[in-house]
Length: 97
Image 1 (spheres, rainbow, N blue to C red):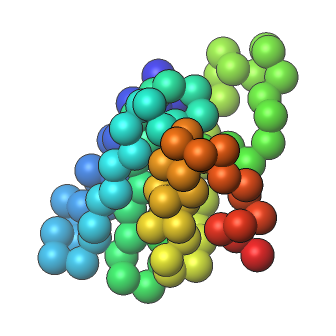
Image 2: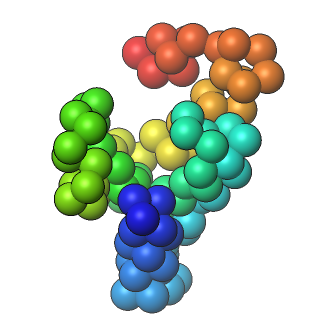
């Protein structure tokens, strides 16, 4: 449910501003929980749909996530980091300082 919301939010923003919004796809094998992840950018900021903290077991039943706004270029770095982590065990600090 959570990751389908991620896809829906990315598509919703793409439909609102077709020419400027770019969607980035992270395949399941590179994501933290083996689900696909979608990020989007409007040319000024990068966005994704998720959660910044670890959810307690009971929160997983009703928490739907939140749209997170990041600096431009974050989505590209995140995708590169996830691929490098899977392939060579890269560290977060190597990509985000």
